Image (cartoon, rainbow, N blue to C red; front, top):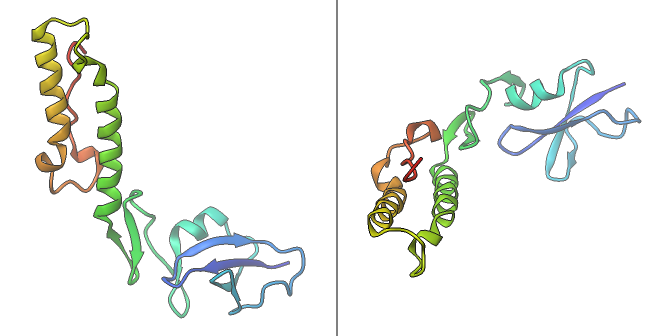
Length: 147
């Protein structure tokens, strides 16, 4: 019985398989753009995927700190495009949830509309307010009026 780790070009384990036939994946063979590497059949799949990498031999790395890091040159590298894409999606969702406050027939007094306008501007300003953020925890999101 064998277990196989399929390794991407950057050394990361894409996934593991336990084939029904031992000669199904040849060690060092290429399958779906990944290189097959035989590993101990008792290895924990989640641990292999999270903390192992191949660099001419198996090595151990720290687990990925968050979704905004990529494995490059045998280390975790912050991917600002992924991070800010996520932040903008969250911001856009929050803004869409209060679009109704700016319709001409919104049943709100002018003072409340002004509060909502300030809230929406604070949302738009998130990237400029937190340019050095590398984690969602680094951002203090504005509070909705009346919340």
